[in-house]
Amino acid sequence: MSRPETSPPRAADHLARRLFDAGCRHAFGMPGGEVLTVMDALVRAGIEVTLARHENAAAFMAEGVWHRTGAPGILVATLGPGILNGVNAIANAHQDRVPLIVLSGCVDADEGLSYTHQILDHQAVLAPITKATFRLTAQGADIIADRAVGIATGGRPGPVHIDVPISVADERVALPRLRRRPDAVPMVPAAPEQAREWLAAAQRPVMIVGLDAVNEGAGAVIRATAEHLNIPVITTYKAKGILPETHPLSLGGAGLSSLADGILVPLVQSADLILCVGYDPIEMRPGWREIWDPAEVNVIDIAAVPNDHYMHQATLNIVGDSGPSLAAIADGIAPRSTWPDGEIATARAALGRAFPTDDMWGPAAVIDEARRALPEEAIITVDSGAHRILLSQMWVTHRPRSVLQSSALCTMGCAVPLAMGAKLAAPEATVVSFSGDAGFLMVAGELSTAAELNLPVIFVVFVDASLALIEKKQRERQMASLAVDFGRHDFAAIGRAFGGHGVRVTNRAELRAALEAAQQADRFTVIAAEIGRGAYDNRI
Image (tube, rainbow, N blue to C red; front, side, top):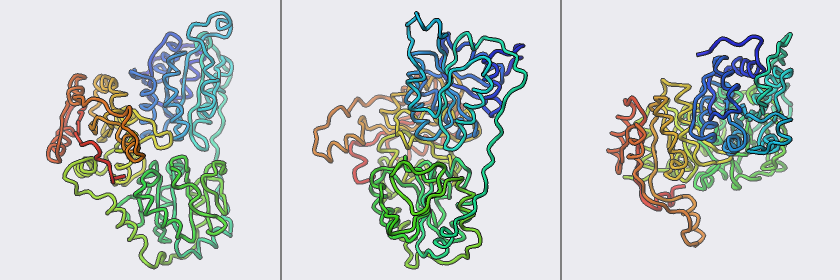
């Protein structure tokens, strides 16, 4: 609940008010003496501050909220070890295009000349992994806050850091007017006539859709264009669901699975027009590097920023919003049949065979049974590891932002806090986290946060006592198993110890019963799914 603002406002109050105006209602972190005024200002502005057990998890909770509300996430961290604990998740926000406002406390400049305890240059540390970093000043508090929001949410979204000196946060400043930059209004582009000619003539077009299209809300245009012109759609993992994956033109997600690549890459290479719509190849692996030659096939690349990554090149680059740009290219083009030899249906059938759902038990059975037991609109999060590759191919979703993961940085330990943030922002939703046992152990302490927030999230843990993906790679390279195995811990007991429910399951029936009970529970549930070593062989 907000408290009355002090008069005249403190610099920290100007900062907090701008974040509230941006739609922010939640902040996450751990307190320190250097951020007490910042936290007080956030609460006075109407932004709830949630205590996490680690700043890394706090940032992922903030991301989970953003996926549900569209407002920038907020991480609060004290100086030194506090802000350094958040570096991994801040880098993830940078690579996964998450608008995260990072608020750190720091000592005043004069004090820093002679006081060295826990002192380091936060801005120097964070500059390479943020879109911008600022040091708050009292007279410029409104400008810095406004710039931070605009930069974080503009173009390709990303994290922005504000270092807040202790005395500046407390300084009272009466600004004669609050300076705000007006929202940028994108122009509807005039479609290059060459692009329209290529699209009208294409017999085997394919569309590759990525995260920019999700962030820009281009789903309706993508679906309408695909249906009107009969264009199959491949997505990156972050764009899963922008076209419902039950749609006959959907070829699902791609990027990590060699099995899926073996089906999808040849299809793309046989196309006579490739439409990259908001496609950010930061999610993809080397198997997708330069798989086409723009001198031999027409490639139209619509992206938020110019192509400087060189993962692929295009015959024509269009820098702009995905939806309006695609609509302008497709406007007035008559519908026609494409892929005359039934290649789209053939590819969908091949993907189904590559990822069968009829296993008696194992990771594929866990994923299939969960998909059957959970509501269609469930929000799921998934940690990095072998299970993520399998789940990202098998999980059928019907809307974007319903499968949350770290797909650019691919960091472990993200699924649990992502789920908690999503549930906090959407309490009516069924939210399920899927973790490997190693990733779950990284953030197990956040179960206490889930208990204190009374969040009935379902945490599914794949228990095989191994870093399965790395162990698999070692075997494939005929190396000894090294530093990948650990004990089979009682994860169900860990859940109960933190105040939730805990269930161990070893077959489909037990898993189905546990999922049904968890959906009715008044607190969180940890479901430990025991699977065998090597269970991912020939599966991803």
